[in-house]
Length: 354
Image (tube, rainbow, N blue to C red; front, side):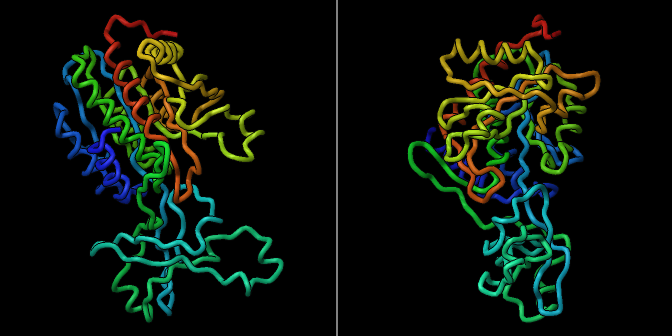
């Protein structure tokens, strides 16, 4: 991936974006889209749009949800410690001892997630799964009054992790699920803007996927596309202990290309288009069996209005919903390329009836 794209990705990933509080990252996304799109805008829900070849036909929607899982402050005790709960689904085992960024009206407040030291836990406590009520956030406040002057009830927080490059084109960050999808659809739209497409291509950074596919529903209703392609992350199974998981979700490896979903959530002709395009363009790909609703924006898009011909492409991802997810830059580039070339092939004559 070119250096300028990596630097934008770094800046984008380091902008906190928990569900319901996507405004700052959405602004970063739109500012980048302004460099090539015909038009960019935001709807009442907070979804961000960038259209290429507006007025073309049919309308094609590319959706990646910009939101990430997060935390929310719910209570401040007399000593200034903060209680909190989750925004989206957490593995609570990863939370104790983590640093957090709390985003307030006056800026970012740093804190640490506390728990009783393991040395002081009774045997039965050590065997129990940790719960939110067992944890608190320590911002160093001396009492409730000081804490309330810094943090408000309902303020969102994220874990304090940044973007970093590893080796062999692997990168790590908090929130690749699914800011990397929002990045991919933006890259795909940028690429297709140079291909003279017949379709109007709408890239959408959808909001609130982690709390119920909410942004995909409202944005797809507004666009009313003929074709929708969602981009999310999928489970890489190339790490230790994944033998049984391969039987359930497939043999998916980092660096071996896009995961193209196949199943009832997916229009078979869109699936065929994506596979044929990958073959013609020399793009490696992996097939993911999806025997039911996928739990991604593709599910909401497919069921919009009278139905949308929907596809789903996923970025192989390690350690999903942890503070240090990993993706492969080659996969990211290939997914953007695949989507752009597929979108450029879509015209009004394409029969998408199953």
